Length: 306
Image 1 (cartoon, helix red, strand yellow):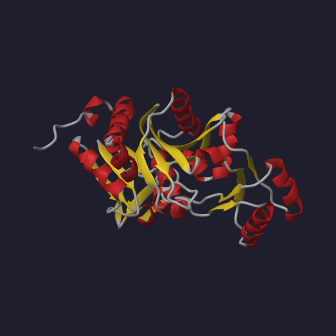
Image 2 (cartoon, helix red, strand yellow):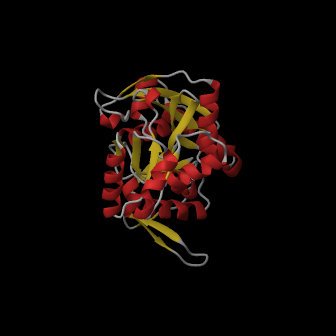
Image 3 (cartoon, helix red, strand yellow):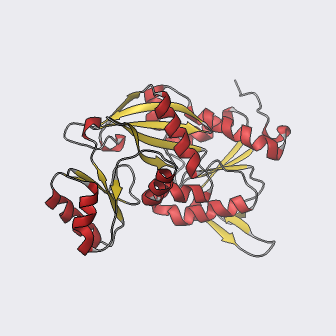
């Protein structure tokens, strides 16, 4: 099978692991920087080129699209989909997950529990919007932030109003959530591949920090999920249309709460914490899903070289 990985950097851990896993299983794999891909659109004659050469004969694509290149990266991914290339994470699913507000709206409609969330645009409505949420502390998030960036804990109502005013002054889209104190700065990252959680870790925040992201100095260890936590993680990824996803949950007094869903979850932290070969699980999903479309001969694994 010929596999493409859309990634800005071939040296990133996640990209390297996916390349290694593909080659070990006998597949041909190439990494394409989505920002170096360009597209010709014409009836019956659309094409994609990369550094002067046409991209063709690709069987499957794994998108590793960062927040800074969401628009262009998903456009390239969409074009590959229209050319008949299989992907576990379609462009529309990536866009649903990347927009935190849209993601929560979709999942709330599916009955998935989450921290109470509010949003509003007009400054005249701020007091009433916060009243819908309840007493502080409040967590204020940029709508398209990642790795804990653009997430602020406001411990008093005046602080909430100040942060909201600052974000509005920057014309930033944001949402406000209840603070779940009993989580004590910890969350769960559930790595979903297909219809199962293949690995899970508990992330704990560093002293004085409420965000548990590893990029913020947090620590991680393998976690054992309850049946309810596993069910929610799989349901959340499925509701957004993602075959590969990092689903973040909080353990609260009223049960597991969904924080967000990541369409390009990193592999380094979860593989180190759990010892699970997540990259191999992703390749196995591609082989399974592509088999019906391409025929067994195209996806059959060759023995790895000694």
